[in-house]
Amino acid sequence: MIVASLVLFGGLALWAIVEILLINRREGLYVKPDRPDLSEELRGFFISGIFLLIALFLHPLYTGVAALPR
Image (tube, rainbow, N blue to C red):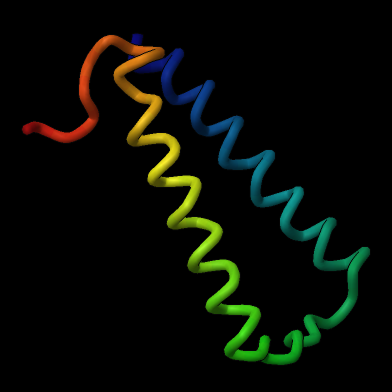
């Protein structure tokens, strides 16, 4: 069982390292993107909050269990 885990996760780790090296070679040097405006940050924050509220509201309907205790 231990050998199978080592083969599985060792193989995944090796694959991940090789992929990182290949992607870095293909993409070249990293160029840091410009910092977003405050308005863009706030828009993303509010859209995320709306999706969270929708998920909290719909959670009991599609799971049968409230997401937050009452």
